[in-house]
Amino acid sequence: MKIDSKFHNLDSSFLTKVNSLIKEHNAIDMASGYTDFHCSPKLIELAEKHLREGLNRYAETAGEIRLREKVATKIANLCDRQYHPETEITITAGASQGVYTAIAAFIKEGDEVIIFEPANEYYAAAIEMNGGLVRTIPMSGEQYHIEWEMVHQMISNKTRMIIINSPHAPTGWVMDEIDLIRLQKIINGSNILILSEETFEHIIFDGHHHQSVACFPKLAERSIIINSLGETFHVTGWQIGYCAAPSEIMKEFRRVQETMIHSVNSPLQMAMADFIGNKEEYKKLGPFYQAKRDTFLKMMTGSGFKPLPCSGTYFQLFDYSQLSEDKDREFVMRLIKEVGVAAMPISAFMKERQHRPHIRINFAKPDELLEEAALRLKNF
Image 1 (cartoon, helix red, strand yellow):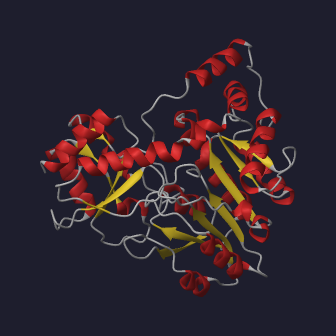
Image 2 (cartoon, rainbow, N blue to C red):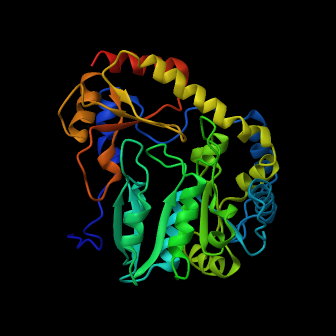
């Protein structure tokens, strides 16, 4: 049977395409986005407890109220802004589902959405699947920062949404207060929504601080915050995240979520509700991953890979131009085949591909794995 594809422009991710090659060459997977650490034994105990309680019913579409209350308290403590757990917090099946739901709820045929590239692979796909038009702005320089004057110039009467992501994956750039102030000024007086993915809010280095849109009242009034608890508590595979937004925005978000997935699994929500108040778990994330970054960079000393600035996330970009003139995808394929290390090409995060000799490596790995990967890369 011949299938006439509904989405001609959609393509499998780069990682999906090379997974079989990674396995074939028994390569160390530094390309995938998950963490390689065990979560707290206490969190496992709590999950087991709630599983044994027989929580096999559907949760509310908005999520278990206990978890929503805990999320609201966490945001209030960090940003001094109160989101009402009944009407302004919704639990999602991870960050990507939250992003898709937000786009599906507010983007209609012909609406323009501004994204900054490199960007998470699912942004452009979600926009196009919902009839929106992707407007890309390349991030500038080795630090891949946003040129806000370019944003101002890109705005039109069709602009419906701007998607931001800080700490930024895959580059590790962290927005400063001035960045959010400039964004607030740009959208003042418009009907533009801000979709802010803040998955790595606690993984920030070198004295930087997370600037959530929730901390800026005028921005918060028109912003949809998407976050994930997986990266914070080393349970990326649990796929539990949340959305925070003003009640009128949240009404539309929940209408779409109910149709898409109805709800997120109850036992893990309840376990997370019991655990999320443990501030020490996320307060230690920044120092923990900064030490991992520094350890890996030290291991890579003497290689031909030049590290680029990384102020947050557990992703490190490297410039390989001293080693090869290959385009990034070709270079990554060579790394898999010749030294058995898998990395991500920066072009995998660009709809409008540019030639930059940069690759992304996930350093959320045990030291022995980092050491072996560094040894192989230094032998390239």
